[in-house]
Image 1 (tube, rainbow, N blue to C red):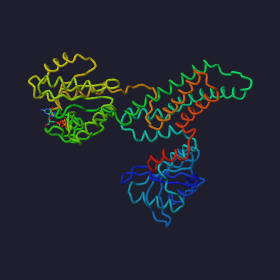
Image 2: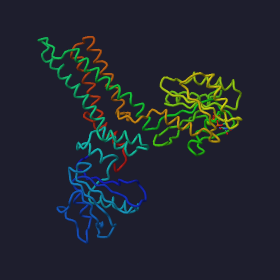
Image 3: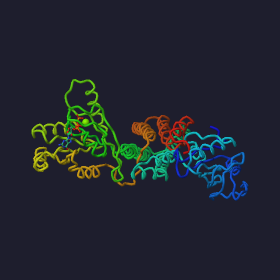
Image 4: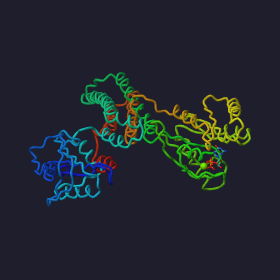
Amino acid sequence: MLNSDTICAIATPHGMGAIATIRVSGNKTFSVVAGLFQRNGKRLAVEDIVSHKAYYGHLININGDLLDEVVTTFFRAPHSFTGEDSAEISVHGSVYIQQKLLQVLVECGCRMAEAGEFTRRAFVNRKFDLAQAEAIADLIGSESEAAHRVAINQLKGGFSKELQVMRSKLLEMTALMELELDFSEEDVEFADRSQLLALLQETLSHVNRLKDSFRLGNAIKNGVPVAIVGQTNTGKSTLLNTLLGEDRAIVSDIAGTTRDTIEETLNIDGILFRFIDTAGLRQTDETIEKIGIDRSYKKIKEATLIIGMLDSSIDYESMLLSAKEMIEKVDFGHQQTLLCLNKVDVLPDQGETLLEKIRQDLDNDKITLIRLSAKHKIGLNDLIDTLKNSQPLTHSDATLVTNVRHYEALLRASESLNSVQHGLETNLPTDLISQDLRQALYHLGSITGEITTDEVLGTIFSRFCIGK
Ligand SMILES: Nc1nc2c(ncn2[C@@H]2O[C@H](COP(=O)(O)OP(=O)(O)OP(=O)(O)O)[C@@H](O)[C@H]2O)c(=O)[nH]1
Ligand SMILES: [Mg+2]
């Protein structure tokens, strides 16, 4: 990538709109854009351009034709998003004008920007670190209040700061240990081993806390996974459709209608949920259905919340049995389970008596029981309230890791730090311990981009949109 190129791209969503913004960045920006721009019939001289000021005027084609009435803002380096001279031209949002302006810019010597190239330049010019650059993509992609909050915190540098603190502690440790290596003949110990161990354990638990926050962070970004499970014909697909307010899944009274898992996200009062309708659990010899049921179990494992569906219109003993089976099959270690007595619309008292009876028979206070009619929307608000209250996204200010790349780096760092701990506890030679320390530093540094290769940067920024 040639950083000396001046790049251009449409920064607003593609297609027709009231206004579209074209971004230009690089050292030829001012001369190229000013050359196409007229105020009151006069060209704008580059030396007269005032940074951060919006100019109203006309865009004139190379051959002198009027292209559009526009507002252009110039940003002089280094006080711009990219750190380079740059401009944002707001044109009328016609697809033709946008394309024509890009064409003219290219004819004047600009190059079409690659995906994420503006942000990449900002990173290279140290406007922010890599984790913050990635937070910009998350911010743009955020679909809920919680996702927005996490992205904003990361953008502000909260996460980066924590990493920096950990890295400087580890660097200090490394320096002390490596000093010992320099004096190895004299057999001196600069670093008190028990102090080092305490420092290390502190850092390790911090790394682990961040690493473990990924489960939650991921739920925020991609929606809290809620698996709807249960035997065939209990009304799982009906519930999904009712929640979404559309006929997403096929519903029928034929047992085994849903063969594959169906996932849809839904924003409920600022919390993004990802509902997963699964194939009904039952004994079957049918190959495809078996695969579907295997997938159901996989989704149960991955889910944060489980909605167990029971058909309350069948005989009580069978329903109780399937409730017990479900409780047994679902791992309560890291999940919460709601059991829904569905189809209460067919019961005389809408399931009040049944609810009390099953509550007593199950005698399990870890389980929330809800009366429901997925078809006739009875108890739906209770279900939604329970979901909102049981979801793990609290309003804590603790940093949450939402990015798989960061998670992997933390995982590796944690492994290296575990080796360091083991080394210190078993009095391994200093050079071996310091090697593991260097590894941990490397992985932590890769998150903020202190240590990165061109290849890594290429992969990260290629996931951005053009114009970002
Ligand atoms: N009366 C009544 N019928 C319901 C209710 N919910 C679902 N049903 C009916 O129960 C039958 C099965 O519904 P589905 O939603 O397809 O059930 P499922 O659990 O997805 O079934 P599989 O995909 O086969 O596992 C359909 O005929 C629905 O109309 C309800 O609340 N009340
Ligand atoms: Mg179904």
